[in-house]
Length: 281
Ligand SMILES: [Zn+2]
Image (cartoon, rainbow, N blue to C red; front, side):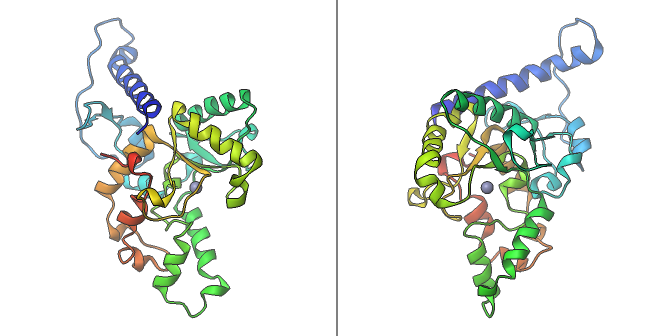
């Protein structure tokens, strides 16, 4: 992980810690010495309960409290417009209506976007949170492509997986991942696209963002390179860690070809198929 990203992580961790220690004082309305909240390991069942069950388990790596995500959050089985952690993306940042991100990730995006603008670079969000049902819509449409007629399920799955995730396995479920400007490869090769990419490589980490699907030559598996797809790492890395300890193959179901998930090693090859320095430790 590069230095900017590491510094950003540390800043966010200190903010969370400060909030937790101040919470009892804020709630009681007194000025007594703050007391750390009691440790609880109850797993929340849904987004609302989860919001209330803030962050009480210790992260084994750095002893910073972390939030526990529900299976529904990790699999995208929720409605972003009704989720307390999510906010709608304003018109000035997207041409789409009714698309959502996690609030913290969107705040960081807005700071990044403003900084880019000062450098004469414009970026818009063309895709953000896609829940399970939305991803299933993309998947099923591709499944019916004319060119797949007569092909085995395994081959269809492998072909769709070049650029699209299986429902239940996409980072776009998490509200931390966004696609910028264009998903056309050619856009990023010259002109405004190349300029934006160069700027993002130089500065995105100062705002907690990183390119997830980098060149495969660097030892990454899974999806092809995507210069448009960026992750807000302070939340995404923790969600990835919890996804890999919580989600099993039986959780990947409810769409065409879902039985192939284990055959294509979707967790190891695709969910973990990101830039190696972005993997949870
Ligand atoms: Zn994407």
